[in-house]
Amino acid sequence: MTKIKVTYFDMNGGRGEPIRLVLHCMGQDFEDDRFSFNEFAEVRKGTPFGQVPVVELEGEQVTQCNALGRYFAKQAGLYPEDAYQALLCDEVMDAIEDVTHKLGGTLFLEGEALKNARERIVAGPITQILKWLDARLTKQGGEYFADNRLTIADLKAFVFTQWLCSGMLDHIPASLVPDMAPALLAHLERVTSDPKIKSYYE
Amino acid sequence: MTKIKVTYFDMNGGRGEPIRLVLHCMGQDFEDDRFSFNEFAEVRKGTPFGQVPVVELEGEQVTQCNALGRYFAKQAGLYPEDAYQALLCDEVMDAIEDVTHKLGGTLFLEGEALKNARERIVAGPITQILKWLDARLTKQGGEYFADNRLTIADLKAFVFTQWLCSGMLDHIPASLVPDMAPALLAHLERVTSDPKIKSYYE
Image (cartoon, rainbow over all chains, first blue to last red; front, side, top):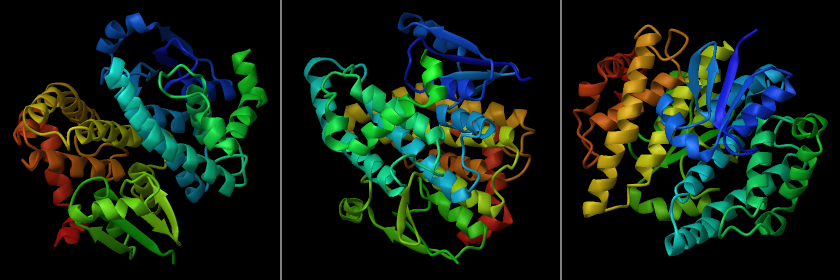
């Protein structure tokens, strides 16, 4: 069996979380290499792009959270076989990653600069993605983002929605998702109560 | 046959170009909906995220360049069947997209702010990605990024490398690729002289 080590922040969220969730869903043992924010400066020196998550597969470092999530999801049965459903799955993952990049650009701002940048992101990209995810979900039948079943796109959306709802991000009201994207809020609850996801957090 | 419309800037490069190249390689007719930079403000109003490329498949708008590139590449025989080779292919695509995001953040800067931002990106992310792409290519045998043959990862890298080598980007010396990534420069020439790619630009 392949030796897998996942290096990511010691938090239940972010770019590393869908990878951990997929590995848990498939019952795959892995080394859960977590570190604190204070340790990041040191950890990043050992990564190809100064970024995490990084996954070691048989000692080889592989980067890029969506690429890794897709790879494991194929093995876990959490990725569509059908090419068009796979496209819809990938589109959701990349659209979320796109907004995460924009949010990432604000993480080290402070004071008025942070407030202004966050308010611009809320009014623009976050409003767009929430409405789009809500509409897409509804169009796909309301339950899952692709293939009428749980896929890696749902895990990515779950982690993202949870983050926005957490109230952890200054100037991003926790009420955004309930106010703008009711189908996405129901989706968050659906994934949260999925037996495999539930067992991961227990 | 599916009706396909690709909406992107009227330039031979950028996020839309690998999609056009894949469609050309597979001999698929498509509506090549190009617009000038001046028209972007108007065009973006009709897109889900105010961004391009957007592809219409039977009238449905789909976004995200790497998701779309992968979808067509599967049909074109330009995507690995093997899951691990597909991971390596995806990793290259997403790593390039990552740096493109960072470069994108500088496109509307001017003067000293532009110079400082570009110099930081050259010293950091661009140096990292060029060295990484060069090493990865060498490790994979020197010719292609995955599966020992032309894939969508090579088309993505080709468009990116060409952009960096173009001298079009202020404060990004066209000599970076030749100086830092000789294997990647040879790869650019290899893809450029591929009969299908050559025939597209003729």
